[in-house]
Length: 70
Ligand SMILES: [Zn+2]
Image (cartoon, rainbow, N blue to C red; front, side, top):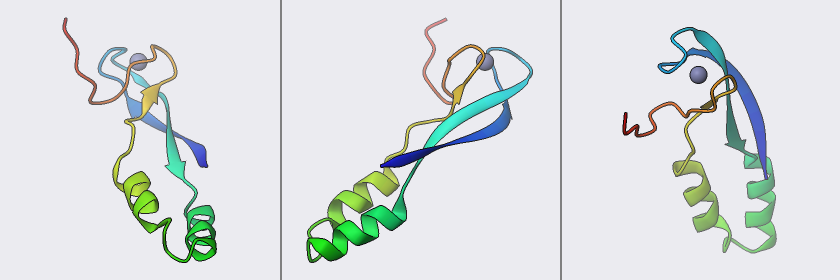
């Protein structure tokens, strides 16, 4: 239910601009699901839209904004 997007960002771990991937929810699919369920799907759509996973570096695998111990 999500599509993967790519964007160049400077990775803190790698120290250079690298390709990052992140998921974007399919709003069209959620819209039709909301119509089919007569609005019962709206809270799930809202939750999916608000809670997002941070972009991940394709070189080292670390996520932007993720907590690091060292
Ligand atoms: Zn990296």
